[in-house]
Length: 165
Length: 419
Image 1 (cartoon, rainbow over the protein chains, first blue to last red):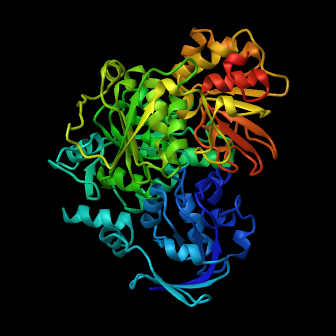
Image 2: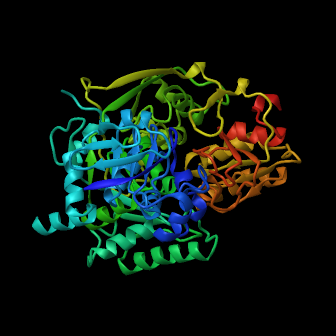
């Protein structure tokens, strides 16, 4: 599968409180969460992000709370994936569990600038920066995570396993 | 090759003799928990599976503590969904307002988490129970739904960072200062994907309350869990509380650690974390002049009776500064009662502080103490991210309860010795 869109660039340690502030956690409606996505770090993100665009960030993206509202808000905002130097572990889990692709690509992150046009090929494990004319490989997704994605997420995976047992 | 505390517990729950860092395992869950923010998504996901029953109605805990007592209509709807789910599926451990408490203080105090357990919770501070020599870690709502269905969780076995503690902490230095110091040293991703395992004779000087505080903030260093060895203090805490038989796990002498750091507890002074990351720490003596508008004492980090005693000892007979609002949140109903019996509540209220029913409220800017633009708080909570306690242009400083109480009197960040 190929993903393509513009890069929105942020720094290190982007936490779940700025991805979706707790004042909006009294709902789990994806459309409503999307309206406030990234609000406390970039108030206009929700209005300017285009379908397929990428959030590109530094180390430890998604640190803090376990709120699945964070990947839900990003997915519902129209963004297709998050590319970062590294991810906080609960965010990493949550993203796979609910089907938001995320990639660790430190070299690419360092050179991507806001507004660059990116194309990600998930099967080949490659990221092309069309604006800069450069191509990168990202850290391969562990086999188990690929199984999760193939099964259609954690719940389907568990349900199938239980049935088979 | 020997195993660390975390490996030992994971191996036992995966019905394996040995597990190694990096391996993916399917492990049995002793308790799975959710709160009023994370449970609604888990309940919807669980219902989508069409299951007739949960895996074990005794081994699920649902605690409405974040926006409860309900702060608005939407929060009320979320808690109602939890309450109805708990009733329909016969969930034994649903805690209603008036009998509830902050999940990570309530569940171990109630004996629902015991040493040697494997616990997952849809709340990042689920790592708190490592104080009991249990493995516990935060997950998302989908993981909670899967665990409620199957009683199992997929985990990657983490590498372990060993933290050797020596010496006795000085007066006014508490567990909070030790963990803030460690986070300041290694950074907010210093233990990313790893277990933090404590060792050394300094542990004997740490009360169970302090150990809970330290395990609680393992996530603030990016860790999967923080875990203490079982000792006499653990035994004294668990015996008489534990609702299930527990097993004592020890690390192998030849266990392999990815890294090791040492902390001399006697060399520490109280620590304050500046905005907007818990790693931005400074020793109290180098804080400078930081005026404050609000003081919060409470949370899953520092809402235990020992924390209230520490703050009350500082505030007793003094007054909260004119320009400051001080808010006290005992973490559970039991702690609330105990604070009444010991006269702590009276000390706070006569000093001019507000004394609240248990809730996570202000810690995450939910309710009961939200900050306006430009306001500044010192808080015994765990995070000081942008907008954490309210307006994105407000500020949160993190400290121990004694420093928070002294600051309430001073009107600026300072220690008990300045009073």
